[in-house]
Amino acid sequence: MVIHRGLRREARLLVELIAAVAPGDTARARLLGDHFRDYRLGLTGHHHGEDAYLWPPLMARVDLEADLVLRMEAQHERVAASLTAAEEALPAWEGRAGEAERDTLVSVLAEHRTVLLEHLADEEESLLPLAARHLSAYEWDRLGEHFLTSTPKPKLLFFLGMVLEDADRAERASMLAALPLAGRLLWHTVGRPAYVRRMRAVRRATAAR
Image 1 (spheres, rainbow, N blue to C red):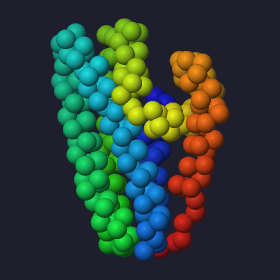
Image 2 (cartoon, rainbow, N blue to C red; image 1 turned 135 degrees about the horizontal axis):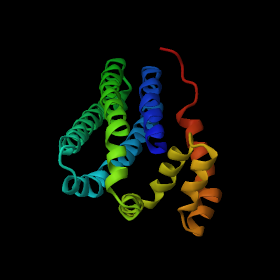
Image 3 (cartoon, rainbow, N blue to C red; image 1 turned 90 degrees about the vertical axis):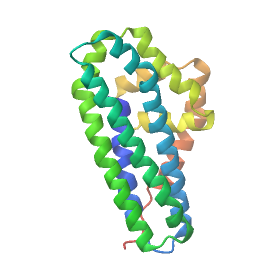
């Protein structure tokens, strides 16, 4: 799933990039802190859409597989808790970019990544095939529409870039075709260049510890 690909990549990079920040580099800490908050916003919005538009119709239509849906809901709660823990650890590191605070945050983000990867693998292996059998195309579209309408517009182009980055040609064409013409023009003229600039800043080489 192309969305999951982007989430896996960013969860890994957050751990690696923050671990590489030199003590005292508060500008770098603030930049990566803002990047984490945007990542969290995107992941949370994606999960809220599933909570609202996937689990309820599935629970109404499955019997023996109901425990699977309940497991997905429980995993969402664990992912949310890990994001909250990271959000709580972030200000202390951003304030002075201390080594101990950085290492605490890296540990929390590593735990978040472990929980997230477990959930994504479980969802892809078990839940998505079940949803494909029981949900209509209209219901899948509602999930995408929820994300588009609930996400702040300035952030939407960033999330689109995050998803498209590792998409193949067919996936990219399909996702862009789902956008209105104005949205596609906005992506090509504003969103894509801005995303490239941002990723260059976020992922630039940092000083070794």
